[in-house]
Length: 219
Length: 161
Image 1 (tube, rainbow over the protein chains, first blue to last red):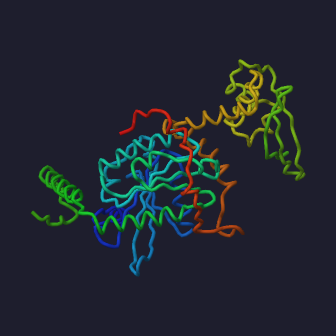
Image 2: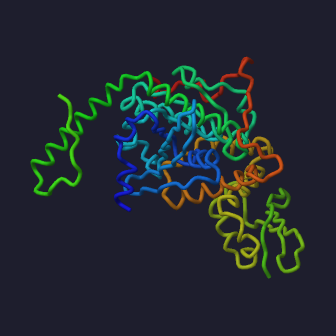
Image 3: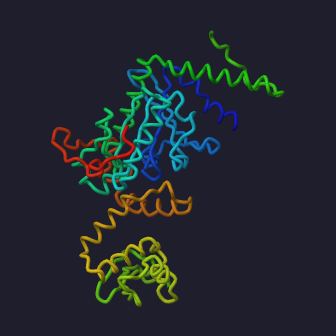
């Protein structure tokens, strides 16, 4: 089962055309997991990977006749420290940032999340989601400047009654695919070189044999 | 006797907590008025709620009522004693909840708070199989209209970049 876990967290698979990684960000209890569950309905089986403090949701869809495999990465409590491990961001193709319309601090903290996101993924599409509108429909008559200022798409949603939930995730998948087709992935190449560097260092200092065969890296 | 609290509220004069509960044995709904004694506009609502929660006679009716909810009811009573209207009191509490930072809570406290939020979530939830369920429910929220800026954006933010 460890091997299965490892292969699921093998980030190289995200280089293939039909595989996308979408991450969720936001404070505790804004409803990130409830949104995922509403989108996936009864068909989902989340993988709780406690070693990495994340929950992995798998989803398959067909777009323009091509099967697309989507990995949604959700935090599993790590967001309380308001910072995620770099591997959470690595090779992600889109980000869904969520706040709770009943708690101002979760909206204000979007700037913290956004700043960290852009440190690791300067270019990927980011969708801003205002959740729990069922609790206070009057908020849908307000405009929220954070998304406007950053030029990010904005959605009023409710994980409880389902309003706009499916739209958010379908849009996220479309934007992720569009990003993959158009980006140079320069940062991914840099990260790959850094990973190889770390690996080479580890090999020199460790007596253990390398379990996985190292991919040859191009000069 | 098996008692499940269904609704709760307050009576201002004299200060009381009201519980509408179901008697599981008889299946009947009943009302219980619990006077809040030795309570003034200066009382510690958290402590008063805890005393009532563990009161020898009243605890059986309050088993399903969370401590946090009891505390909120005591806050309403105290605000009333201080001369605030119900609307003012509710608005003030709403503001307090807006400022709540759950990232700073312990695991246990966070779980408790999430359970409270879940009450509203379950009440508003639409599931597959419900008569009015729509999987891909899309609603436009006046994209064309001029919207009022949310008050959360009006103040200066240190984190702007």
